[in-house]
Image (tube, rainbow, N blue to C red; front, side):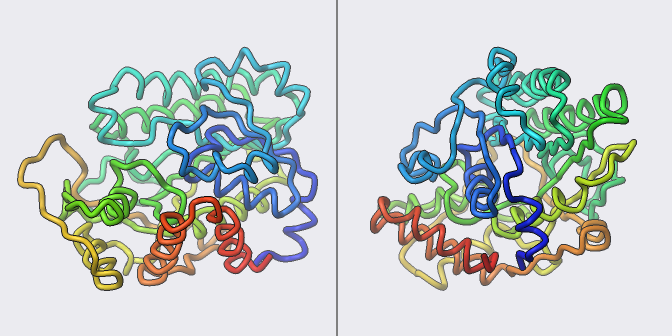
Amino acid sequence: MITEAHLNFFKNKKILITGNTGFVGSNLSIVLSLLGSKVVGFSKKKKYKGYLSNHKNFKKKIKTIYGDINKINLFENDLKKFNPQIVVHLASQPVVKDSYSHTRETYKTNILGTIELLETIKKIKSVKQIIIFTSDKVYQNIKGKYLNENSKIGGLDPYSASKSSQDIIANSYKSSFFKKNKNLIIIRAGNIIGGGDFEFSRIVPELFLSLFNNKTLVLRNPFAIRPWQHIFDVVYAIVLIIFNSYQKIQTKTIIYNIGPNRSSNIKVIKLVKNIKERINKFNFIKNKKVLFSETKILKLSNQLIKKKIKWKPSINVSKTIDLTIDWYEKFYQNPFKVYEFTIKQIKFFFKI
């Protein structure tokens, strides 16, 4: 999977990752570090100790500048000293539910935070590639059709609207400021699951928390259809996008969906039942009261990334569930050893 060409390319590459303490960011940081890159993160510190980024070995391997993305300009000199060649922007308020209770914070972080980052990058000449990680929820999602990169954007709930705005703003910066000197790539990924996620309003972390605390899981939106995919497939897609898009500056924004195979577009309740079949130790109920509006059906087309980058999902729903169960069981048995277990999972998948 990882070739000699990949290792040669990533060796000593200087990569800045905003939001590197989160679920996607920590996994991506570990993988790029294993590939030989010099990774620096810029992020808020996660309060929950379970995050990989709070493990002592992560802190040894990955330098993190702790700060608010809205104030990244205050760290301009530190970033210039690092001289990053590639920037991956993951810092965000990532939860739909929280966007209703913390609406102002969601808009400030996801919109203004992106502007502050891009304004700072303007002043760092070493940066040749910027990856903006938005969301599959940027799309208007008309009638539950498969959504490709040309589908209309315009999310309605606060989170989706903030990510739609982020998408538009990033494209504007490419057209206005980075047309000739920096590649800008927008990634819209589906629902990502796997080891290391502790946003407990999401279904998988909440499920395992309920399981190990012997509580009943409440399904918020059981019949919603989502494009489920494992974190390793998503990280591998990011690795290939960076690798394939670095050499030549494109005049237009590059946009990719990262979505699973069609068989992985399933209902929340089916995902939960599939997990229950394997561990059969928890109970769940369907919430009858809708607390806030969410998109009912999300299906992402992955045809463009398959064609251009030669990436395809390699972990189906069944294998995704197995890997995820293994990780959380290991964590709740012995959280101090879960980092080493994560490294083993990563090395096996990526064949490093």
